[in-house]
Length: 239
View (spheres, rainbow, N blue to C red):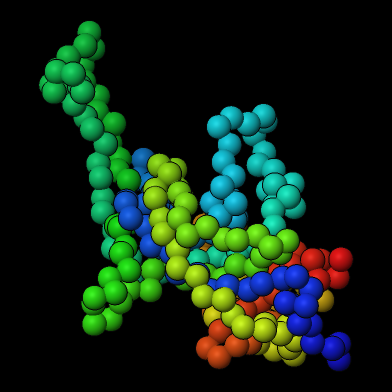
């Protein structure tokens, strides 16, 4: 059995994050027949781009460069999920924006049918008897990178606030079998790891695993937190 790895001694920190969107959050988790749906799930790639403040105004080609972009970041996050997240449906506007009529133009009006489902704003609500947790996830950092307390997320650059709690002296151990307390990206598993059981969360750019049980992989356990160590972070520790 390999020896445990002290992350702090290798220049790696592990933090627990709670994200609150202060406006309506929208991204297309799935879209069918003009109906676009946002799920209360944040893919870990989206979180990495937002926390690194990396956005494309324009790009070449039709294939995202996820691996190339992530390799240049001094952070890596798990996927996030909110237990409490209200939703709002907004239908497409069938009116002419200038005249507010439907019978303008040389041709008959053919309104676009469809709608978008947004995620309602979530506030910390410290004065509430049971404050909302927001979207919870974990983030690994290196090179003394300081995670931001605010950023923007989603297609409309929704403003979000993040509260961080650092896990003291995180120790990574190779576990025979463990269940992480967060959503899991299957591409983050070690080559020798095995997925014993899981529920599928379908969200672009690819699925995530909920309630996953993983055998023969690395985890950090600290109190109620059980965090899977992504293979990308393992390369930091070995390098």
